[in-house]
Length: 231
Image (tube, rainbow, N blue to C red):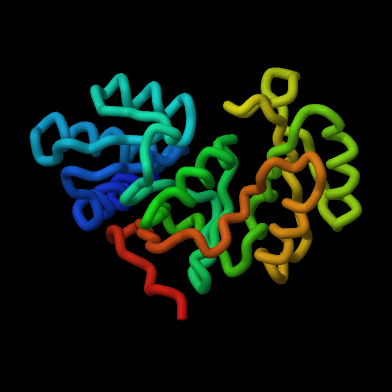
C-alpha cells in the first residue's frame, strides 16, 4: 500500500465502525482527515449516511465540507458532538496521547475534541512513536504580542522554539495567532510538560493532546486495525 492508500484504509475503517446517521460529527484537519472527509461526503451522497451535522476544526476543512454539500455548523451553535475523527502527527500507543498541530489547527482541534463524546484518531504506522516529541517538535500557539518573550520562556524550559513561517512571514492561525515549533530533547512526562507550557503568559494552546483520545485506528501495509486500549 502507498501512504495515501493506508490513509484511505484508516478512514474507511473509522467510517464503517464508528459513523452512523443522525449524529453531530467533528471533522479533523490534515491530509488523513481530509481523506476521511471526502469518503464521508461520498457515502452521504450515495445515501448510505444521512442527517449528519458537521463541525470543522479549521476554515479550510469547513470550506471543503461545504463544497461537498455537507451540513456545517459553528461549534458555538451545537450543544456537543457525538464523535470527532482527526489525524495526528505522532501517536503514543501505550497512552493514546498524541501530538497535533503541524497543520496549524491545534487550538480548534482541541476545542472540538473536548466537546466530543469520543475522539478517534486515524493515522498510518509512520506516526507511531514510543515517546511524544520523537519525530516532530511540539507546536505552541501564542499571541503575536510579545511572542519572542514567550519563546525565551520556552527556551528556558529546555526547548528550541522556532517561529513558524509561511512565505517569509509569520504563519497566522485561523484565530490570528503565531505558532512556535518547540523541539524538546526528551519528554519524560508529556502531561506535566503540557501544563507548564500552558501556564506561560501568552500561550494560547499547545499540540500535546493528553487523555483526550478514545480510539486509535492505524493503517499499515496490510490494512487498518485498532490499537488496543491503554491499561
